[in-house]
Amino acid sequence: MSNACDTDGQVHSKGLKFGIYEDYGNFTCAGYPGVVGHLAGDAATFASWGVDYVKLDGCYALPADMDHGYPEFGVQLNRTGRQMVYSCSWPVYQIYAGLQPNFTSIIEHCNLWRNFDDIQDSWASVESIIDYYGNHQDVIVPNAGPGHWNDPDMLIIGNFGLSYEQSKTQFAIWAILAAPLLMSVDLRTIRPEYKAILQNRKIIEVDQDPLGIQGRRIYKHRGIEIWSRPVLPIQGQYYSYAVAFVNRRTDGTPSDVAVTLRELGLNNPAGYRVEDLYEDVDYGVLSPQTKIKVKVNPSGRKCRTNYFKQWVRFIIFHKLSQCCDTACGRATIVCLQRDTNTDPVHAAQRRFQTQKEIMSAPSISEDPGTFQQKEALTLYTQTGSH
Image (cartoon, rainbow, N blue to C red; front, top):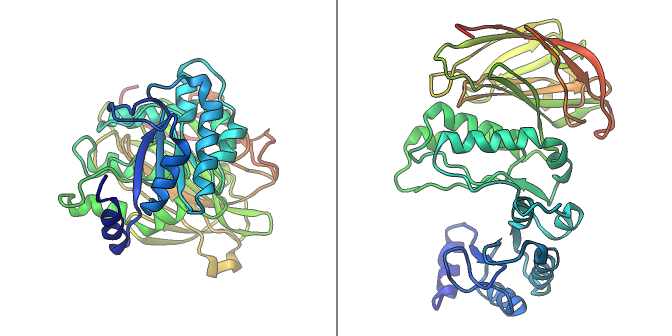
């Protein structure tokens, strides 16, 4: 990159950050030279170029060598004195090699890391990532926090593989996952409606919540999923929460899901302020006894997304809730303020025992590491054929 310094100036002059790709191997995945044997030199070069973000892949490297190679390159980046975000592919290569990643070391040395496959421009690819994060959340979620994040890969919103509603779903679930938001799209040709999704400040606020607690899948049955994440503001023992309802069904029939706020763990007697974050509609204050009915369309169909957000200035209502409605390929995000003694979504995975429409859900505790089965959650789902 002979004109790297000029490139740096052009990028930064536009208010952008300068990112670069490398590989901990003899070659990159595309066959270009890797950093092996040049860790200190390449780190210094990147710093001199004004690089802000370094992605280190793992092609042509032995997975067992990554336990010392990735930390060493991180040390070399820090020695330059320039702050550079360090994105690692360390865990995913070891997972596929049958090794157990040392997440304690990964957290210490990397700012974000990949756990699963590269995303492709398709809904099937997005679904596979959502499934992986849900199925392995007990291992994945505890590793995330401020300064060290699980990376489900890039947002493919605005390309060709996702419908408008599926694009909303990816953005909503990535926000629940506290995922780094990295776009993979041609900004010159993106359509306005997809640009609006990516610029939704309220959804971005959920993703960037300062608590840095990654959300979880708390319910899965007959193609309907509920994902939840604790967010600010907190008042006393009450969190706010973001909750996403996702329809993964493909039979073409919308599903009506009805549940009370109390059944979702929202027990504040003062009620919860509700706002639709996609439509920017304020639904006012709902009591814990209020039953909300969410129409969740199947994948690719038009669907309404409701996001219920607590407004900090209305602290008289304690914590307000947020609720989202989504279709398969579409997600409803709900920010709910909950009593951490009765419903901590960031605790261990909530297990639902399904009996037709009755699911028993665990309660939330003050300690994210504890899990107690306590309160029943009843979902009434009306669909077409099963």
